[in-house]
Length: 193
Image 1: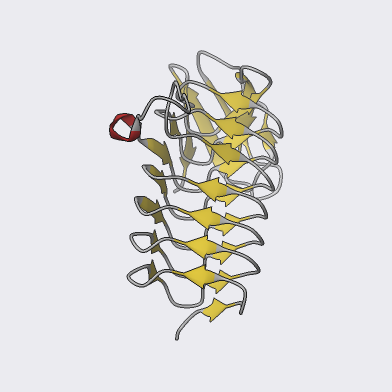
Image 2: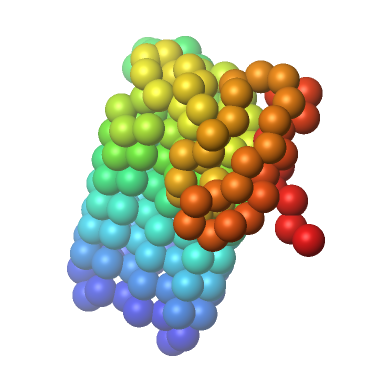
């Protein structure tokens, strides 16, 4: 086995788990799950059948990743954050054929206790603050807080808040890495020479 599995973890036959991943206490990984290399699944994590988790993701304790959720490389899911996959659930109405796809792009951070309502895309290196409720798409590098979540700024790939206006155009440097960021027509990007 090229990954670590705690004795209390349940990994259903057929699940694909990449080299160097760590599956901790009381985790359940369903048979159809695909988990990349170097992933950490904290205590009491659930991973559904139709889930894809990219390399080097960190899923903290008490997170359930339900069907139709895709995490690209390097996504951080804070403790007890929530994904949904049915928009209007009812216990007495079967809606498994109505699951909505949720995509979290490379490098994004989802803070502790935040909720990601199904059907949205979280852009690359976006940062969702603790307790926020995301119910619409989030741009790359956006800093989102509140209920419902609203954008209050931009974040660098290193996780530092950037000195950029919310809209329009601008340019700044990450104070830690020195990488340059440009805001053009309301879209932020890292300019790597």
